[in-house]
Image 1 (cartoon, rainbow, N blue to C red):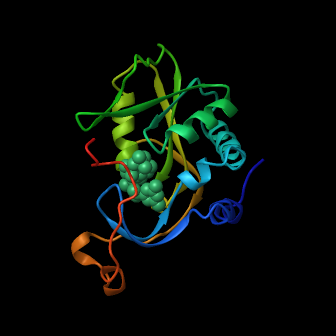
Image 2 (cartoon, protein in one colour):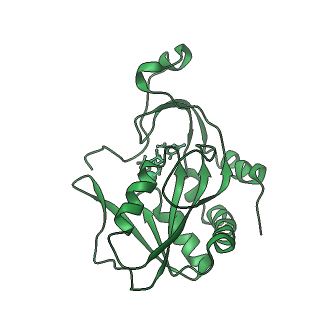
Amino acid sequence: MTMTKDEVLAEFRDAGALLEGHFILSSGLRSPVFLQKMFIFQDPVRTARLCKALAEKATAAFGKIDVVVSPAVGGIVPGYETARQLGAKAIFVEREDGRFQLRRGFQIPEGARVLMVEDIVTTGLSSRECIDAIRQHPGTLVGAACLIDRSNGKAEIGTTLVSLAQLDIPAYPADALPPELAALPPVKPGSRGLGA
Ligand SMILES: O=P(O)(O)OC[C@H]1O[C@H](OP(=O)(O)OP(=O)(O)O)[C@H](O)[C@@H]1O
Ligand SMILES: O=C(O)c1cc(=O)[nH]c(=O)[nH]1
Ligand SMILES: [Mg+2]
């Protein structure tokens, strides 16, 4: 079943996942809004609703998918659930010496049709890094999917990206903060740069 942008946002709102404050994003940009996707993923039923809609959108855009590859940590749960809905395998890349790699013996079979699944896209940096890692293996990357594209369609990831919702959320370089944001203490919720 398709979901409208309002229905997707309602899932985030109902999960308490729409946070306001001063956040340091994975890219280093600062934002007054953070989508705490883990508040979605702690509820398997809510996660399944969203990922079913994402799987349907990905199938419509890209056809059959054999393997879903996601960037850890945030991509693991939606990657798994989207793969379950697609009847595909679910594997993930994680950082080794700061770079995303397939570890743990994960492999992509020759000829496999691969979908990259991300939770949230802001600048697309994590997606591009995940795709670079995928392209070092056999198989064909057919496209990418995410729950929320908060670049409003502007992020360039080098392949077609489908999302459940595109949002236009402001993000600023640290040296160009609006005063109301500069007045709040910054917090960094994600995993990039934490010893990775
Ligand atoms: O499009 P981008 O600018 O790369 O931003 C989005 C990325 O940021 C978050 O990951 P983060 O690195 O914060 O770590 P996490 O997945 O462990 O939450 C999120 O899960 C995306 O992967
Ligand atoms: O850009 C990010 O790091 C980011 C933004 C967001 O809203 N949610 C998230 O988990 N990461
Ligand atoms: Mg992430």
